Structure formats: structure tokens, C-alpha cells
Amino acid sequence: MTRIIMSGCNGAMGKMITGIVKEDSQAEIVAGIDIIDHGDTEYPIFSSIKDCDVEADAIIDFSTPKILDDLLAYSEERKVPVVLCTTGYTEEQLAKIEMAAEKTAILKSANMSLGINTLLKLVQDAAKVFATEGFDVEIVEKHHNQKVDAPSGTALALADSVNEAMGNQYEYIYDRSQRREKRDKKELGISAVRGGTIVGDHDVIFAGTDEVITFSHTAYSKAVFGKGAVSAAKFLKGKASGRYEMSDVIAAN
Image 1: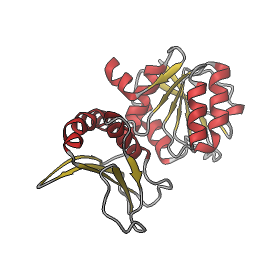
Image 2: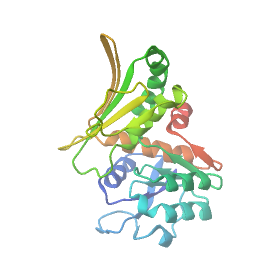
Image 3: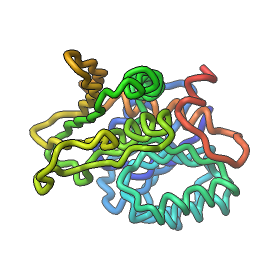
Image 4: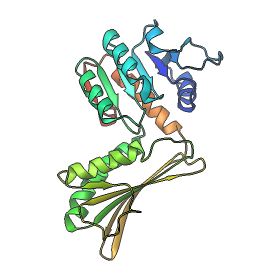
């Protein structure tokens, strides 16, 4: 049994994960962290992770980058591994995560779905073929109108996968409206669309002369992210300090 603290328990993802865990005989949510307490959960809710005194094997965080410092401090002090599912971290915060991983087990992923994490590997392989032959690379991501960060963490992860495969030679271009010039071969364009209730849609486009290859992933429900987060929490239980990826979870299954 993996005992989980759910950070952001009263958000959309927190509620969904609560429901998923109820059906999982190998996991249990023992406490929640949220500034709002609706009082209708089967576990205690704390307004701050600093106040949580419940024993746990892992933390799942679907909240806000604002609580990162407290979250990492709690994880380090109590040696409770943490699954970071929140996006929108600053470069300074990303550096703090890497430093904290020297003292505690951290799994950070911009997207928890099996499909996206498989796609990250596929686009690397594709880049070595198509980008090497001069194909332009563009990424288009679409999300619901309540998402506050753009581009999405997943779009950036896909861009990073392509860039790493090509020796980090690309410059990311987020807005062409002020660029009155032809596209440079070393550009990697990233476009964001926000509207309606789109859960998550990502296209990685390799555009060459007379042909276009597109890798697409569409999430129809947030449940794919919740299931991945729970799998990650169970994977992290008892793990040594270090930085882990969803690819580690996939390989262990």
C-alpha cells in the first residue's frame, strides 16, 4: 500500500486522482493540501504542507509553482518522495528542483500520460532523420481556456526532446508577429491555442520539401494524467534520492 499526500486536492486534478485512488487497492490518499477545504473528503486537509503531520510514502503535487519551496523543504526533511506534475516553473525553481533531488526522490514530468512520454522518444528518433535532412520543425499545442501558462510544459518537453537529438542547435520562437523575415533553419516554432474545454492536444510537425510528417497526441480526459501520477507515486515509494522521469516508471512496469 502506498500512502499518498495529495497537494492541490480540491483542484480538478486533485479530485480526479482522489477518485482514481479509491479504485486502486495498492494506494491510499492519507492527507490533502489545499487552501480550500470543502470538508467532503475522507482524509484530512491542511492549508499548508508545513502543517501536515500525517505519515506518507509519496506526495503528488498538482497545485501551483508558488508552493514549491515549502514542498521541497517538506520532502527533504521527512524524506517523502514527491511527484511534481505542476507546470510553469521558472528557471530558478527548476534549479532548486535539481538541487533538492540530491537529498530526496523527485519525479518531475510536464505530462504524466503514457502516450506523451512515448512520443518524447519517437520525436527524438524522427528528428535524427528529418531535421538532419533540412525539415523545419514546428510544435502546436492546444488547451482549455482556463490554462494560465503558455506554451504548455508538454510542448516545451517535446521541443527539448527534438533539440537534444540535434545537439541543442535550435532557437525557440514563440511569436512571429513582429518578425518580418523568412524562417531561419535553426528556428523551432512553438504555438499555443487556448479555447473551450480542450484537455490537451499536441502536434509535432516536420515540414520538408513536398512532404509533411506530423506526430499527434490528443488527450480526451484528464484521467490519463491522473493515472500516470498515481503510478509514479507508487513507483517512487522507497526510492533513493535522485531525479526520476516517467520513462523510469514505464520501464519498471
